[in-house]
Length: 465
Image (tube, rainbow, N blue to C red; front, side, top):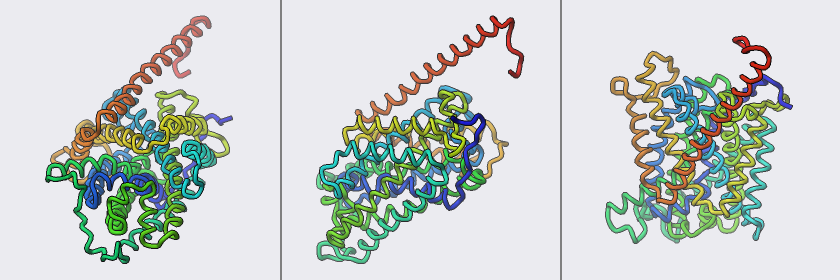
């Protein structure tokens, strides 16, 4: 049983926070979706990574400022509620954060099963992904300190794997030609005009961003971070900077080694790039490292999803039982279980299709980013005197320019998705409204029952009970 009033353990320092953010970002898309991105943008996909990095930086700086003011587990929920005072807007935002975290965990778990199949041919991808989620939910329960050190170890392994690709691309030859002769602006033959090229690059950003988002989940472990008002903003900025440098170098190296056509037709694109340089040994090595990378990201996303549930329940927005903290592990064990079950359900419903799942997750995250940037803008005007240990730079009067660009770019990116993805994302937002109505109705029923009991007892309860 959970002990009433038990607190989450603060086991995250600056180094662990940077590794947490870097691990969240790195493991998600670069090992899994770079082939799909190559199919859209060709050898020029590195440009899409740069564009995505700029968009991430705008919003990342907004998160950095808001996390320094509100170091809470239910980060986005708290930001929106503090800015607009609207329980509905805050609930929809928090609900979407949970949705994105758990859908993303499912998508990356499916990516794990693709690399796992290179070692165990014929393994059922849905079963493998579901077992991975279940096992990592157990790690999530054991404790934040253990989870974060697992993340740190796996992140170092991930970086080593990507360094192999970067090194091979810089120093080895591709198809008998020096790397320097590769046309890094080559795009698929169907792209015949500058307008089509721009559309392809922006369209690829919609998928590339699956490899970038995750940094925002740092804000949801603030209550488990030492000196969170200082550490979380620094870790946010550092993790985006580190991963941007790595991503651009990997994109350039991968097309140098294998070319966009081969990458786009492979289920394990980075393993293919390694094979071009090192033969079968490279395939085995990168496939093994990819297992660590995808495992790491699933773990971090499950942690983030459970913490936003925990935080929202503490504010009464979700059932109070999700705020229960286990007395020994000091983790929100009921929220951990709920996150794991929900992610397994998404895996089962996906039928093993990672691209569709990833697109819906990215659509949801751009809605969240729009709300977060708008919250920062609103608070700059509503509460200009508020203490801000970290401020997003560049302002025109009170208007935070980078947050404005983050809001505009988030809205613009929402227009890049196909109708089916937009419909699925809108349905997720709509389900949040329904869930909010159900939650409000349940709260009203509880109050009615309490009032009836008080009347039977001879009068209303005293103030403060």
